Image (cartoon, rainbow, N blue to C red; front, top):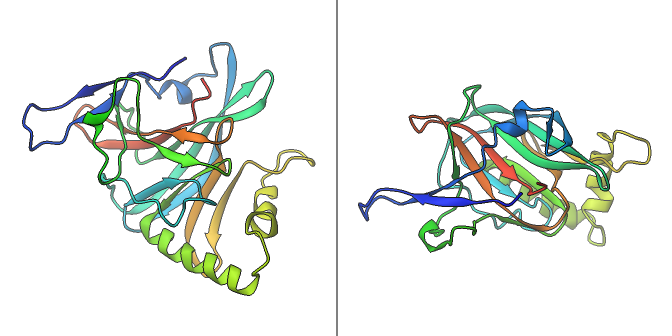
Length: 233
């Protein structure tokens, strides 16, 4: 199934236009299967948003450079839930991951953008998203991003010849492995140097690519959730 979008917005040039998805992402969290493919929901823990400014990115490649989305939410601690597709030939694949701010059912899905991204420049089938080169996506707060950068730098200062994934994160992911030979598909990582702050990392669908995020909003425009679509369907 392709991802189709269309533009909505005011004719007032001072009001930024937005782009909505024609996909209703509620269905991934309300059904046991889609297109004859079984689905499973998995709680990935809760994310601490100290500022309410959210970053979604590949946590191993682009983490330090990714800006937050232009929309913000009320600071707080919110659950993260993954919808896992049970594919016939490729095993379990993380299809959609949701950061949930309320139990209210979204009525529309607005593309999440960062500063300088203008949705009026997109064609109907285009989207803005974050790049993945290490097979992982993540959610975190802008404040956590800054604190993680210190942890990252300190790790390499102490271990100049190391690889932060194979020499550190691989063991963290392994803690959530389902089977003995599984490397693990997600981790709720609390910063060792600032344990109140965390990053929730998860595998990205079929791997590397460009993946869009959407704000789930009610009929009055209140944000209910944020999802990343890994385009498994």
